[in-house]
Each structure stands twice: as structure tokens, then as C-alpha cells.
Length: 148
Image (cartoon, rainbow, N blue to C red; front, top):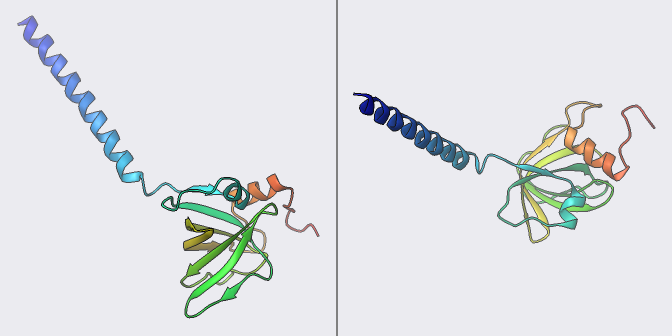
């Protein structure tokens, strides 16, 4: 009787360990495309990512680079003061998107151009995404809102 209880307890523990390992593997597999790392233009210039990697690029839209192409295609450059990365986006841009404004884009870096699938822009005069502020501060370019 004692041996049967001990064997049953070991079986339950083994099943729990296997279930935990399988659920962890399934969660990791499901999230592999949902995790996007943030990169600043300087980081991309130093170490370009693989063309298959989806990540977020953030910085300021460089003045004089915003060009509207045929249809909904737009090209511009994003800078953090240290480097500038060309961006291509096909779609509708946010209303507050413009030159010298903060933005974050999600996409891939292919043949020296960031091909964005999504563009986010700041939503008021003082807001800028935290990642963009950190990257600009690192380059010594960031100015607090209201500073001239």
C-alpha cells in the first residue's frame, strides 16, 4: 500500500513537470513574433540587424527628408543625432506625423532601408516615447519640452 502511494506521487510530480515544460515551450513559441526590440538609429548603424528580424526603430523625423511617393508610399529618415536611417512606409501616416517630430516604427531593416509596417507618432506637444527620449539623451541631443 505504501509503495503504491509513493509511486502515484512520483507519477503526479512527473506529469506536472512535463506539463510545465510543454506550457513554457508553447508560450515561448507563441510569443516569438510578438516581441519587438527597440533600436535607435545609432545602434542600427553600428550593428545592422538581420533582414528577417522585426524590431522597433525610434527617433526624430529628419528635416527635409519627408517625401511622399506614388499612392500611400512615404520615405523619410529617422535620426537620433548620431546616425540617420532611411525609412520606407506604405500606408496612412498618423495626423501628427511630421518633420522634427518623434516617432516609432515597427518593421525590418532590408538592404539599408527600414521597411516599416506600422508608424506611431507623438500625440501632443510634449509627449515623446520613452525609448526615443533615452536614445536622444544618449546622443546628447534631447531637450526638455519648453527649452529653446
